[in-house]
Amino acid sequence: MANAICAVLTRNAAPLLGEWLAWHLSLGFERILVVDAGSTDGTQAIARAAGKVGPVELLDCVLPDTLSSTERREALTAEAIRLARQDQDWLLILDADEFLDPSSTLDDLLNTGRTADGIAINWCVYGQPVQSVTGSCLISRFHYRSTPAFSDNGFVRILARTSALETVSDAVFSGLPMDNLVHADGQDFTHSSTSARWNGARILHYVWAGDPHMPSHLAAHYLCQDQEDRSPERRLDGVLPIRDALTGAVTQQGLETLLAVLGESLRTMLAPTPESAATIPDEGHHASFSFHRVRPSERERILLTPQAAPLPSRTRTCFLQDMSGRFLTLTESGTLTTRSDEEGLEPDKKLIAVYQDSHPDILTLLSLDGRPVRYATGALQQPVLRIQMASDDTVHFFVNDAVGDQAFKKIPAKLELSPAPLSLPSSDTPEGLSLPGFCTWLFFHPNRSLLDVARVATTLSEEGRAELGQAAPEIGTLL
Image 1: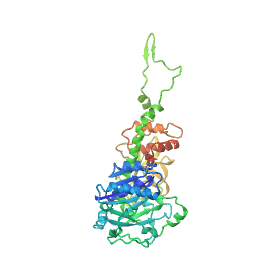
Image 2: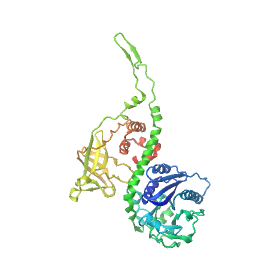
Image 3: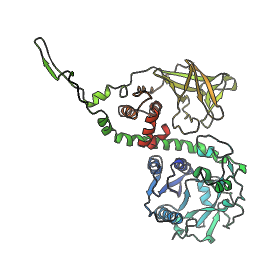
Image 4: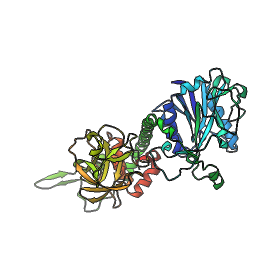
């Protein structure tokens, strides 16, 4: 692991931060520092959860509201330098829409700066997608970039030697003298605004991901659809498992937060109600018998509800075959596609759909070889779908942009799942499961998996989904 730290300066960067962290952890940085300027959108929750996945630290900076954007950046930069000087030899400071892309490895990049105070790395601006593109991650959604001659690509970020960082006189060069900098290819640094130098490394700048609603004059400037360049996708095999682990950690953190306040909520929700005059008395004595009424405890009363203790339901498994005879399967990257037996589809590559008799309209997609299933846009952390039932043996749902909206026949598969999925709770409102009902199920199923939680979340009413999203924003990927 390289003796280097990468810091990201954030303020309400939750939509980008998870993938940014996964990307830079996969490069091999020894430390990742999230320097946050008072985010209110879940950025800090993501950073805290990431500390359970890798060497990620959160620094929550409280800055005066009177600072200009330049002054704010310089203050955050100074904090990053202060912490980096303690242990690391190198420091790179980025924004959440900037991704370091070395041509080979991070260690090789650092070796190019053996005697230099810093390595200057040019931007590579990616532009607006040519069409609406879905993908499991940001890198897969942006395919077109600018040319090296694009003026903004002359901008550089500095991978700096921490021992050379004395004072922060600006937010770009951090006070480093420019006479001892090199480019990422090892050549002496020369500042140019006419052509970027991408040999050795570049900074992928996803402007549209960071500001999708930019003013029209900026949108025209950053159109940048000059050349298709999907080379960043070469890193996805290393990035996606980290991102999935991070997403799971964030979700678990949200569940823990929800459970922390759940006890009081349940007591309030199930407070005893006044009994009518016709209620059986607590005790009674007659000539031939007597009785003493035993009232159930608060916990026992909750356990009597079909949300705390759902009735058992048979679990079924099947393959999904489209009307042309092709089976639902996975691409190498884990996204959905269809293939036929004639095309060499191996039996263990067919996806399994899992459902229960109590909720036949809720499908869970699993792979027999253990690979994760990444559904549609990647907004869903778990591959759980609410589908349309065309008939008892036919289902209908949207697969992805490549396959589209399709009908599939259910081909029964007698497979035993271990562990078996938990039974789903009954709805407690006409529109679906309420937030209290969801919380009740959650509280009484401590051995649940994230997949089980995602299945139950699928049964929520629209109101319940909205309330859950507000109560625990970290669970958003399950909704």
